[in-house]
Amino acid sequence: MRSEEAYNSVFWAVLREMLDAGNVLEEALARARQAAEYSKASELNALKGVISRAKAEVPEYLITMQQMRQLFEKAGFNILLFQQVNSIGEAILLAER
Image (cartoon, rainbow, N blue to C red; front, side, top):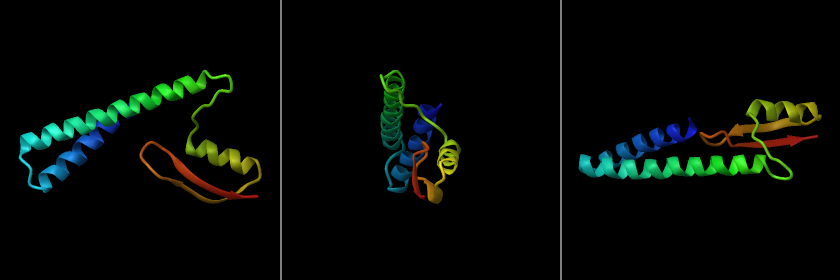
């Protein structure tokens, strides 16, 4: 799903930017498709990395922002800042104990 979302959001953002800059529709569409395909491929590549980390000797796994907050609060931390920084859910967490 995320790779399709990445494709769509990048496609429309690039297309809008290209058209606003006065580019011809056909050129703008081609450039938007190219950027969107790159974004989709990057998302799929990142997913492969996540899958391989989950199978590592010391496995890593993804959690939701809510799960992360709960883990820190359960461990006795006071959350000072917790903010999502991009559309794929990466976040900044600042906490004190």
